[in-house]
Length: 464
Image (cartoon, rainbow, N blue to C red):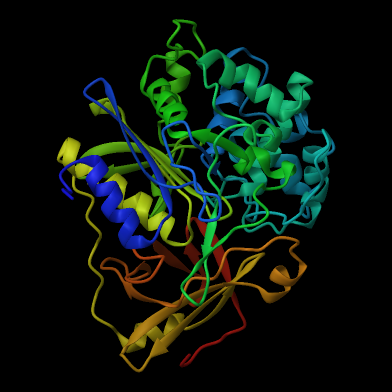
């Protein structure tokens, strides 16, 4: 099979990585190109096509943010006002932070909130209010406005703002503000909407190398604003065309002022050594690739993954969705890189790590911690460094769902420069970049991975 065509590359990549089903859409030269491969489920296989529904994961955040921007454009929300202006009941572990966090802090991940509260607050219309009530349990990792740290909880709270300002449920508000005006008729939140259509099922790779169906299929309703959307690659390509346009729907109806749409794509906070990008706009991750500016967002659900990227200066978009973890991420990213190279001649190169340095390695070996996960860096007899990220056993035990399997430990190398940036060079996290944080004395006290800060546990200095 030729790799020269999109469908050839998609089939070869999905086959190589063992991903049952993939849907890809490209907008290039003013036309849509689709390539779909495989099946929705290994147990109940149906062919994947461009209208098959996949879980969007965090690509949903782009819908949430755009809905809030519509309200801001109408003067119903002020991005600079404290969130408490709209959600007066907000209580956080840090009262000063709860009073200070603005709407914009939520939209560009600068609120200082840890990643998420792992909680299911039911299926009722009060699910989001119930989630926000649990945010008092969430750790603060920084003062509001001081740094970016990716937060699911922040977006769920942003969804609650939509509810209080519109008087509708989050799902209804997004439908009326975004989905309906843009004709995104295959984008849903409720399992009842999804189950009457063809939809993909997530799969997770077991330690024995076989895929099993990821259950349950849905995420809790209280997480919808940060990750509960479900859509087809055709709808997501329509969404991409709106993001590349002038703020009007294809019908000609104005949805967002062009200036507001553009503002979302302009940097609001810089990111340091991050795979996610060079900066965050309003929701969007902004990254320069081979001299062109890209605007995108990725998403992970339970055994399903989505990758969404637009290149405004070239009127180009690519969307990839796949239904197996952990390699669905690698599959999507490989397809996006191939599309950039093949259609635009844009090459996405990974930086080369430095040779192993034992003295530098000693500084960073140890354990680091976030709400739901532990990250361990150890030295090998190699010589080299290994990075191992695991969901905490107590989180797995308490979860009423199958959580995704942990990645195998992967090699990691330090990058040239001031010495505190790194890249993962193998395994399912290959290509992920991050950096180490030091305290005033110069000791390493934290590590950033995937836009999230893991704080050092104890001193942990020495060989792993």
